[in-house]
Image 1: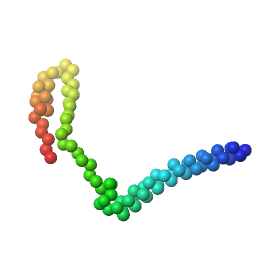
Image 2 (image 1 turned 90 degrees about the vertical axis):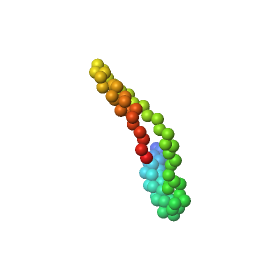
Image 3 (image 1 turned 30 degrees about the vertical axis):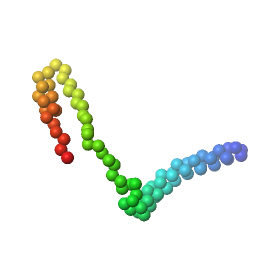
Image 4 (image 1 turned 60 degrees about the vertical axis):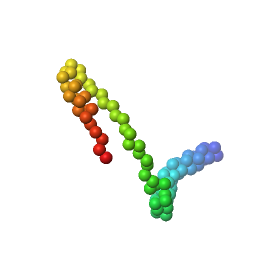
Length: 81
């Protein structure tokens, strides 16, 4: 009977950890945001390299007359900032 009691206590503690941990982490997040201000790593903007490469798949089963204008339109695309 004691083994069953300890098993249920273990399950209760595990459940409490799963319930309380997200709450504690959310509280920690807001406390860091409140007290650290702009020095916090939460406010750093990620560096984005603007050298993108794209691919396009053109599906044309039997009607291939639209492929050349579509490819021409894709090649004329430019990236604006």
